[in-house]
Image (cartoon, rainbow, N blue to C red; front, side, top):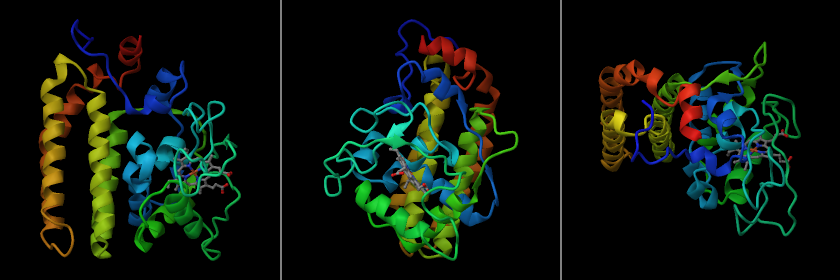
Length: 290
Ligand code: HEC
């Protein structure tokens, strides 16, 4: 539905760190990635990778997650954040913007690496170099809370599974990205529950709620009031489940599964029916961004 007069212009969280002129490119396409495995731990890691509250501090406040810089585990040539980037696609992760404790005095942004490619940090499972690297990144660079062993395990397992696709071409963004993100969050919450990791369960729920917010951005204006209300109430229902207590609560698994059943039955078909009129469609998005 085209924006009607009186509709506020759409807002997209991701545009806070997107180079001017690249808005349409960033919001309509994304680098593809192909995973070496769809193991539950890989999917749990992919869910955590998209949650801003994993990072804490200024990054979380801005809404930044690992995936903001490493889209689908790859890179982000459009990333531009004042005080963090020198040119689009670069970032200085040891900057005081993110962490007052660690921030060095130098401003030395580098090109955001594609995690599907071999890098400075060994991905070899036996060397276990990735886990301590990720811990330092989260706690010291970004000022986040201490991640649990299960979270680090999931994140490292995901990073190790990221591969280029063949052919390696960008793909369109669609509603199915967010639905997959929600499925990952469900797998993540089940995995963290099994491991008795309450903080991991909370972050997995946060991952799902973040994806609901991303869907909502694509259904703006008066034409989608009902869809947005449905998304908001789904998010609140998740919040209520979380506030009911995660630690040692044996009802949380069934409650989450009931939530997902409701979501799939009531909201997903409705969102899919009108996806063609939503801002997932590049032509509509282009008009809305003008
Ligand atoms: C603000 C953008 C940004 C965010 C957010 C970010 N990264 Fe990065 N990441 C970078 C940059 C830039 C580098 C390269 C740093 C360097 O070479 O000194 C990097 C390097 C890495 C590497 C090492 C790649 C190699 O060379 O082997 C890994 C792994 C990685 N990031 C994973 C993550 C994970 C996991 C998160 C979330 C916890 C994350 N990143 C969040 C920008 C970011």
